[in-house]
Length: 389
Ligand SMILES: [Zn+2]
Ligand SMILES: [Zn+2]
Image (cartoon, rainbow, N blue to C red; front, side):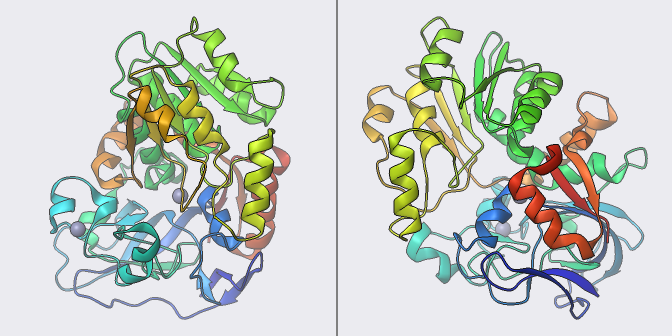
């Protein structure tokens, strides 16, 4: 089968690779119907997140049709169209029982590779380095899904693939980020980043009752999407002297009740601290450029909530004194998709939210390298490219 494969830093190729087969009795094999690129793939492609190996298949957000199931699979059936969360749960460990699916203790066979940097391991993820389990990704004609009964969610017939696709990762990540904020009527929520996850966080915050949503980015078409789809006010951070001052001005000097970081380790910024971060990152001295996160910590009101969705490894100059003295509650996690997918699909069926507008461009697998180059440069107003294998 054909697949989009990693061959080294910024070297993607489309290869012919073996079709995945059932490995364990609880597995299913899916024919991929739609698979989308994620901003977090860019950290892997450019080598910021290590332990990719030559020939690894990328991609972790997908909808597929079940074509094969193992003998211990009870509920998932061949012919079903399903959406699958990017973090793989086992359904049996204490974390899965507590609905903390990205913390699953059983699905990352390479946990020891993560522990020196991240302390304890996350769950495994499709197409996302050997430290995250070494599972083959979804930018391929077929994919193996372990523990199929807890990871496959049937897509209602009335939804098309694009309406369900983002329930795999971008939407539950954003939705979880808003859920973390315990939004009350009248609250203001500011979101750094207006890509797929940031837009989903903004729309979800509005759906949960936020009175004022503020989206921060620098790309005009993304800021426009935030205004149009989430009813957000927007800040182009390249057009203001200080994002924190601007947020103060929009909130009567208090700051937002909750701030959501949907940017992560490759944050762009304009100030001196950002140039320092960038230089250190290029010399391999630490992994993360933390401008968005530092702004969010400074901006949030006293006693407010900081919700961190951006992906981080190690960072210095972390303003822990601000965090502590302002009494900020920090909530963060890789996404616990299995907790949210059924209610997200219900929101689409009920007409309350429809994330399909994120799918701005469609490609075949053969266009994989071109699609990622355009995605990285945000060419042609691209929010998310979607592969139709
Ligand atoms: Zn993702
Ligand atoms: Zn588990």
